[in-house]
Length: 406
Image (tube, rainbow, N blue to C red; front, side):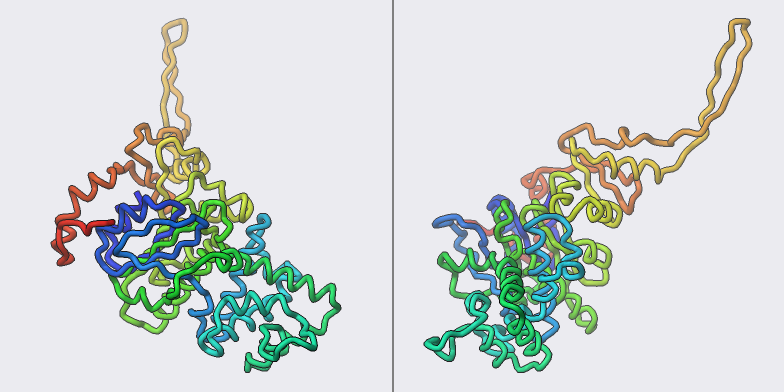
């Protein structure tokens, strides 16, 4: 289902998955420029020759202080997600996370192209150095260097305030910052591509970014930060009334690869952002693990369209759709022992939720805006491209023969 959606989309796309198969299906039918961000720990991975591996450094997308604060907030929320449910309350209720947001924003801003362009490696080193020793070089990545280089009085005050705290309190903030940036520490320990991804790449309506994110969630903060930076970029472009192609975000196994803390926000206002998110997961209550049951219930109610596959245990979604259909008057007739007939009427559900369940593996129930929607047929990718790709290729002015992947 995800591959046909990505193939049919006429605009830039970011495709997140823990496996190579989705990329292998889509790549031949999206002939525009392609880049790959591999967040996995796979040794000596094989990449298609027509795709450019790049690394993801969140500081490269930071141009303003607001960008730095948004990225810092995302990283701290993701740190909480990795340690349990309740990510939505991190910056409101987490004491050390709240105190660490300002300093982390300062570190990110200093390392961005807006200031020194030293990148995420510098941030990792600076966070671990709240105090300089006498024999440390002046340019040692540290809290004091960040305070000197930031050039924004308010951000400098954030670092100075944290530095002057009691050592135990300061170390608690340091621990929060370390949790927030741990995904990049893991990636820094292995060889990375020299080129860094920049969001401007997706200004090309035919561009595609493939993100390989491990299913164990170890580098999920990187995948989530990338997606949220792209969505925020499209928000800005939309608010400036730019002529842009809609961005498609395809996220497979989302609770494991990219559990976005702001997912409900983005789904609720997706049309106005110029971006669409297609999110796949085994069951809707997987989100309970990372965000809690209340957040899961919100997501169930606000998604404009939900495709319930054959065998999916989604009673809540199907029951709500059946209830929306309403009730109807049903009449019954009974015959008494003396030959008389008694008629009665009662209100019953027009359709029961069990009737909405798909009975075939190649069909699914597409719930539209909370209604019963319709049953749809899900062709295999090979069937989809054989039927529809020739016409799509003709309309797009690209060769009908798919690009060879090797």
